[in-house]
Amino acid sequence: MSGKLDPIIYVIDPDTYFRDELLRLLNRSGFRAEGYTSTEDFFSADPELMGTGCIVAEMNLPGASGLELLEMLRARHSDFPMIILTGNPDVSNAVKALQNKAADYLLKPMVERELIGRIRTAVRSSAASA
Image (cartoon, rainbow, N blue to C red; front, side, top):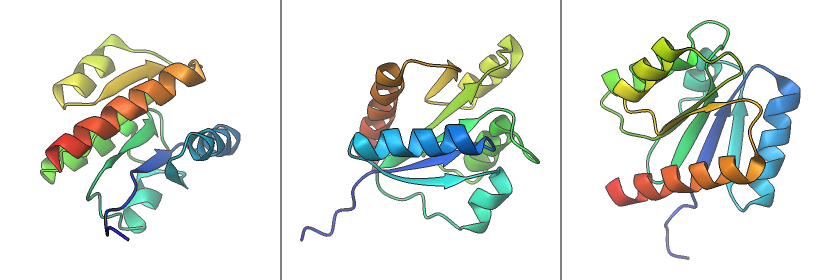
């Protein structure tokens, strides 16, 4: 055993059906994945955000939004990649997300193959900086 952990994808979305489907897709695609309903739920699990992986979060979360989650990570000096998903696109939020170094900003629904490709790109960027 090498001691190197497989990439982990953290999925944060309040929609149970969407979250569970995305977790199944990620598992079928060879990723370890964990699901959370909110920013608060995610932080209460105290993820290490070490090594490789990425966060895939809905913009409109209960409590702190996906954008606020991204801002909290950057305030903690974390460069862990984060992809923001939204069903309600907003140019202002997209600009703020990219200014805070979001790995991507994608519209729901998305093509599974495209999403997996974007996640792989984010994971590669985390591996390059790890």
